[in-house]
Length: 111
View 1 (tube, rainbow, N blue to C red):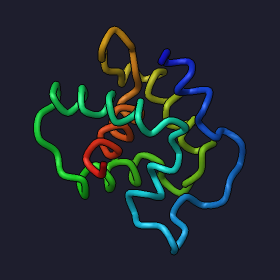
View 2 (view 1 turned 180 degrees about the vertical axis):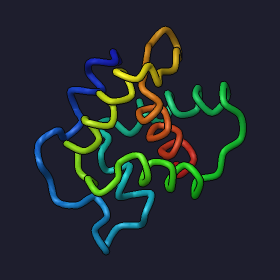
View 3 (view 1 turned 90 degrees about the horizontal axis):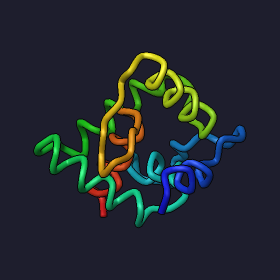
View 4 (view 1 turned 180 degrees about the horizontal axis):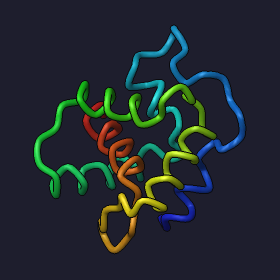
């Protein structure tokens, strides 16, 4: 899968809060991903490069990064800000934002 395919699947339109009460904290964030299997593969590669991480730590880092905007649109904004600030990671020949990598790592840890 190409990076553009993964990004195309993200729900960039305004959406209900991903932290709905019926979802676990990780499921809410992971719900922003269009292709969970591809995200898990990228997340595993990121974790291999980064080292051990806790699910809770990644979840909190993502929540802090998204601030009050807990939607697909908020995620798209965070990703754009990462690229503008050069907060990027080279992973499997893809240049990804730190936010994307953390979200994929969360998917891998919760799989």
